[in-house]
Image 1 (spheres, helix red, strand yellow):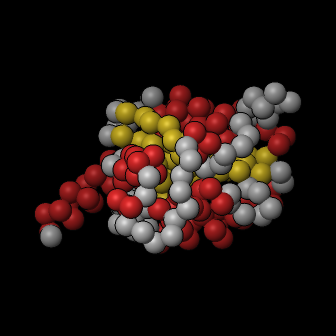
Image 2 (cartoon, rainbow, N blue to C red):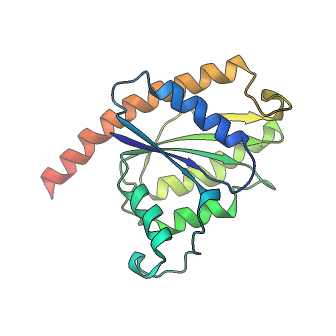
Image 3 (cartoon, rainbow, N blue to C red):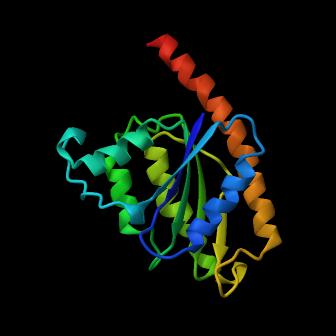
Length: 187
């Protein structure tokens, strides 16, 4: 099964560090066959404005298709000004509401203070719930003290939580496939 790791920002490196850590942990679980990265900084995505997918640029369509064809997602995002980045929200606005249905999503986030973890609860989870995604219950939130001055992950507790996130995600992706297969049989 294919998992897409989404770096939901166009600046910084801490979310990339978190995604590399989760990728190394995912390799331990047999349910995960392929891992693909989508770093929003690598693309010039058009702004979502309600057009059908085929009316966007080839690059934008390619990113949409890669996400829609995945079996699960791990989203990493910084928290800026008490909110998710506009680039990540725009990406979600480009995706069909049915594309992520019953597919697992795990969340990694980084902010300047401990209090910003509430952005996951108040903004990101409602968006993913709208997609009817299977949101794993154990997101990982980090802040500046978990990283060295060179943005290396230095907190062993965070590494343990990332491992646990990967472990739970691997079970969710298996469960997701059963739910999706059942849906196809009933329609």
